[in-house]
Image (cartoon, rainbow, N blue to C red):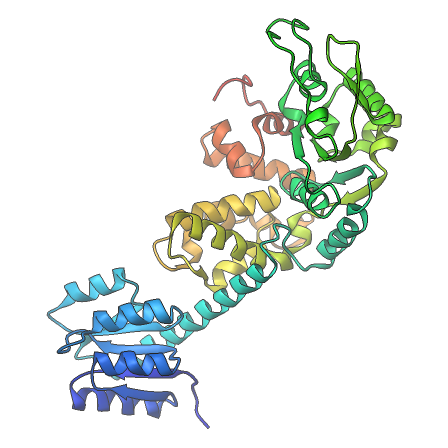
Length: 457
């Protein structure tokens, strides 16, 4: 019984050299085939799949670089190792640039061959595994809702259940958990899919501006209203209006919103005519609305109107089993958009991604993958390619009794670390955390951290 598994093709126009190499590898238990030159190797590669190809660079007629190009195109999961005479290292460097996995300088030791073949087989297996994962994602019709954890299956079930109706839906979950994606999924699976899906970030505008955005305004209703303008409720007529960060609107606007939901009609700011609208509302919040109602900060009647169907989105740390699939999805997205040849992760990198606590949730994971892929020097993402925060999660968060911290403590520590690493740059800190600057200031205020003036960098 063989000690090793893997199919290897040895290509060399020197009969003695290729026979010696093939015999050495067969002794290790590998399934080895030989080719007397580049043309033979290409023909064999079209007939059979190889895990590793060991090919001499300098061969008459079809050289090793031609073999490399053919296999890269036809069989990207095959690891190519170039064999080069000691004096021609330039060719080896060029080959690595073109996608060779490694090279061996002749004369080589038996131990060197064994080691490079073992590593090449691991590489080939990883690329195949990553390709399989990417294929699975494509089969999901590019659905942006990714994950097969019990928590996400529950979300899918609720989305499927509520999509066909008109009930108002309240999405609850931390920043970056994908609330807008869920709102979009509800819309695209509903009879309203042919009409507009209109997202509004309630935290991004002051109440007076938000009111005119939502309900529209008449000409001259306020300074700067030089023309009459339709509101987003009218834009979303017979479609879906997604009100993100609904917990941030003030009491006066809450009353007006409640009236629109009850009466299904809007009045422009500065106008008197009522305009009928047929709009399904999906609202979202990263705050505890029920607690805000108890504290008198959110109207209970509006809360009950919004909270007809409630879907809670789990934080990423509570569905760690979904991290590999999400990471591959974002890798695929970034690689194809930037035309970069990054194909996957080594297991140690994935282990770090799965261990990290992701206070910024899926959005933070996407940002990390995007940044890592754009800076990665090789086809597989190594642990050292990850940002320091992910590589070196604080020990208190990964083991011992100290790891049993409250979510506030986790958020506070992470916010402090991100601010430390960005030198206090609020724009960069907000981007890394996947939140907008207003949310960053609110977080800092909650933890008693002074970020200076809100308009400053």
